[in-house]
Length: 266
Image (cartoon, rainbow, N blue to C red):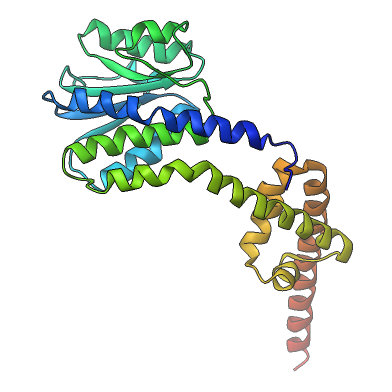
C-alpha cells in the first residue's frame, strides 16, 4: 500500500545503510572497551540529546557503570570533573556543524579526552574533531536510535551485562521493514476513524466503541498519526471532537443544575 507523504523505498534503503554500519560500530566499541575505562558519557543537544536519552535509560537497567547524558550547551559551563580520559565519550550531529557540539568536543580534546561518534561524512567540521568518526548520511532519528543502541548495548555485552546482544542485533536487521508494516497498518485506520467522526458527528467514546479500540487510541490516531498523513482531515476531525466535548461539559453542567434545583424542592 502506498503511504501518503512518505517515501517507503528511501526509508528502507536508509534503514539498510544504517544496519550495514553495525560491524563498524562493534569493531570500534570492541577496540575502545579493551582499554581501561570507568564511565560513559553521551553529549547531545536538542533532538540528539532526546535520541540518546532512552538509550541511556535502558542501559542503566543493566549496569551500575556511571553513564552520563550531557546537554552540550550546559556541558560547556558546568563542572566537568566527572569526565576524564577514562570516560568513553560519544556524540552525534548529522550536519556536523552544530556549534555547541563542536565546542564540547573541542573542550574534551583539549583535555586529552577522545570523543567518538557519528556525522554525515568526512567533510563536516565534527569529522575533523572526532576520534575514529563513523559516517551516517541518513540522520533520521529512527535510524540514529539503532546506531546508539549498537554503541551502548555492545559496551554492556563486552562487560558481560547484556549477553543476548548478538541475538538482539541480528533481529534488528528487519527492524525498518517491521516499522513500515506497522505504519501501513495504522495509516488507513486513522483515516477511517477521522471520516467516521466527521460523518457521524461522533464522540471519542462512540468512535472507540465502533472500532473496538480504546479512547486513548482514537485520540492518538486523530491527533498524531493522522496529523502526519492528512493534516486538514485531522483538523476537521479534531474540531468535531472539540465541539462534542464542549457540548458534553455544558450538558453535564445543566444536568448538575437540574439535580440541585430538584433537590431544593424537597
